[in-house]
Each structure stands twice: as structure tokens, then as C-alpha cells.
Length: 64
Image 1 (spheres, rainbow, N blue to C red):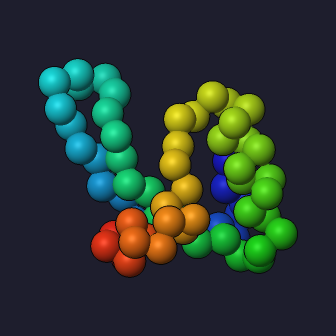
Image 2 (tube, one colour; image 1 turned 135 degrees about the horizontal axis):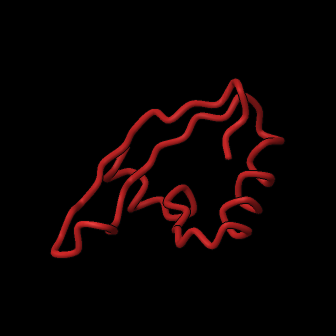
């Protein structure tokens, strides 16, 4: 999913009752802005349920 110069900068997994799945906070640093759209398309392509917190100033400021 990520390019060779991209990196995961934060990972927090919140396990509830199901040990196989659960919500996670994942911080991703991209090498260039142009990679963002491709990443979003890949997330949708592989049916990964996600919320972009960078589009919500309040939520973003609480987590970063």
C-alpha cells in the first residue's frame, strides 16, 4: 500500500472483544503529496474501512 519512501509513524490498536479485528489509529508519512490520492484509492480498492482524521481539525488536534 505504501511507497518505498513512505512510513508508518504511529500505530495504536484498540482491542475490544474480537481478537481478529478492531479499530486502529495509523499515522502515515508520505514522501510526496501526490501519493495521497493513490493511497486513498488503494484503501478503497482493498475494502479497508477508514476515516481520514486530517479532514476533522478537532479530532486531528486531539490525536496528533
